Length: 478
Image (cartoon, rainbow, N blue to C red; front, side, top):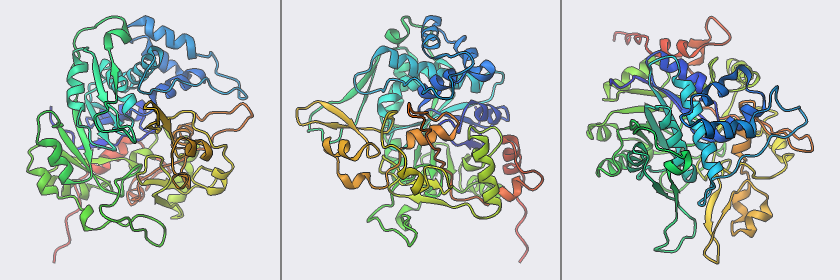
């Protein structure tokens, strides 16, 4: 398979949904669905009535009908819940996982990838965060059941993922190490996943997808490539201006006058060093132009990864009202995207689009009841008695401190799980009528927009691809 020139970035929660990935893949480029919180998205789409019947169409193709039927019976609400009814919660995936939770996670990933791949032969990938380790085996397995072609993983080093993919392809019992804060030397913490138990049967062996590791330095790429057990099939080299999470600056953290982290020479990616590894790679972060694609190829890359240009296109999962506001403010040059060092419970810097009325607005977030009920970004920690608990800086401060966390970690911390879910129109409505506000993340380079909105107020994924594949204008003669 010839490597695609364009990788559509995986943007959660649900921004890189199946519609966007399908549109990109139909063009022959790599369409990517976000693999984060697909269990919650599936459950909420069913509870809001499954407009168009797409989720039910995917469930009808799940290889074990009884498992799909159990999910459908639990969550589907014909016509959708009344506006004053909160949505049924989904079970959290911890170190000890109950069967219904694993099955929902598998079915959710299967449905998203199945819909992204349905009706064409283009390549589709799934993007996961290494940080969310407890959910990884189930999400990977569900995506593989649907025939996913690529797995992209960042927010940490996916050292165990090559072996995990091999194991899951054969439907064999798997385990994945889990980082537990405060764990003592010699303690072993992991999650287990047995495909035969989850499905109740063993289908034919699965095709193993290619793994692309998302890294921010050549050193990390070399580390992963040095051993067959950790070697991915390629890399995405991501710079700090990309949307969502970015790597912390190397060395002492310094903030500029706007409170954003300052990156320096140590954060520059040594592209020739990565090229020398002989594995395909893509450049990411402010790459949305024909000139950047040509430059990437000239440097030895297979191509580029592009996120924000696709996040604002017609097929993305962003709520249409938010999308129109973002395009309007960007056109008027009033849109600001900040790299906030405190917003994400992960501790990584996170891009926030400064939109009034969203959870990026300090006044809006101050009015939000502080709680952690989705819990995808919870950190496992060792209790004094040796058992494992979970905490999140975005949960109530007293609870976080009671669990051994530092109160200072909670300052400015946003609930990304609920905010990002609301951004795709699936925010939770609380029993008291409170509706979760959205939270938008974008990259900090928006220079592509005038090219894509020259003739219309909006644009499609195909427009993005045509623009990027246009031959760049020749440099002026000197």
